[in-house]
Structures are given as structure tokens and as C-alpha cells.
Image (cartoon, rainbow, N blue to C red; front, side, top):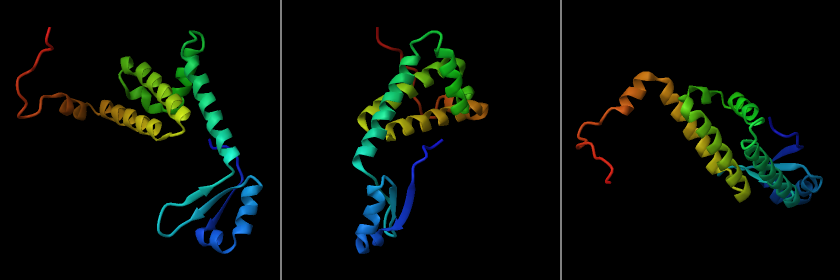
Length: 157
């Protein structure tokens, strides 16, 4: 669920032709999306507001991750995360806790760095892993040795 923030969209050319009009919205705390024809849209907002959002996200990630260390709260947090990401139930039981832990660790690291792409990438990777586990034929295909594989190598002692 996204936070309720005033948003408005303008063509990028409006910023060039009527900058005072567009900046007036930004000065009021409105998030402005500038639609471009030749590239992805741009989002303009007050730097203070963006910094507050980043700090709040980082603090929330820390709180969630710390909750994993509380024996009473952990099952509740795991249940909530499984509701948010229902595909976690498709993972083998021994991988579910690892998934939740790594997702929260990556969320915190990403939020602290101000770059969320590593978190969303990891969530996507775990979701794809769950989809593989949900398909027994695919799991079997991916678990068998590939043609042309050499002999099984054992870890050196």
C-alpha cells in the first residue's frame, strides 16, 4: 500500500515553458511526475521530503530485521511476511526462514544505501526459486546432471 502523497503529472515541456507553475506544486510538497516522450518519466520532489522517506524506510527496515531476533515476535513477523509474499510457502520449509531473513537483511542494506534495486532483485529471485519448487517436473529437470557434465567432484579434504 503506497503512502498517500499529493501527486500531479505534467508533460516535461511544461517545466521548460512554465517553470514557475510546475515549481509552485513542488514547493507545496506535491510530487511532480514529468512525462517524457523520449525516455522514462522523471519525478521531482523536495529534497527534504525525499530524505525523510529514505530515513523512514531505513528505520522501518531496521525495526523489522531486529524483530527477527525476538523469539515472541518472530513468528508474527514471519506470518506477516508470508502474507505479503505468499509464494514463500512454495519454498521448501528449510528455505522459508532463510528467504525471510535474507529479504529483511537486503531490505535494510538497500534502504541504508538509498538504492532499493538490490532488494527488489532479491525478492524477484526468491519468487522465481519458489516457482521452480512449485513445479515438480521443472525441479526434476533442473536437479538432474546436464548432458556433457563431467564426473562428480568431491570437496578436497
